[in-house]
Image 1 (spheres, rainbow, N blue to C red):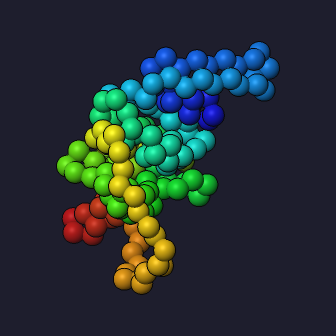
Image 2 (cartoon, rainbow, N blue to C red):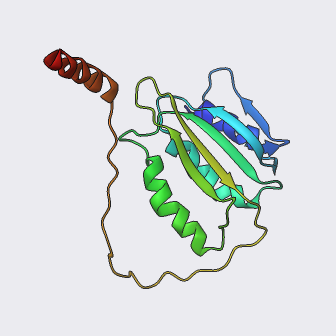
Length: 170
């Protein structure tokens, strides 16, 4: 999964130099210019899309062109932050730094569960040359606690239930 992450970084940069020795134990990475643009990436199913999004969230505002990244893979797993967690925590935090607008969005197109993946997430971010300084010294109050529920393999449950219901009325 590290190789997939490096490939993603290579796609959003221009002029990166990557060297890996034959045994795969030594990596040399010289980053290039943060370029951006439209990027599509198939994430390794061993890690969640959130693993890849964490880096993109921090790098995207400083790219040369606006970023539109389409990431495909597992959207929720117990190891990495989920897309919903990043959407409800990292995105509002970035808005405090002045990174916002219509072009700043994180959208779940399809959900994908391990081991097969199949999810799709679109992250768009405009270019910001500077960010606003923020002082977060006071912890604040908890206003509400929310959760996200989503079905896994619900199609099979509904398909058998639908057939059973139809048989009752026929």
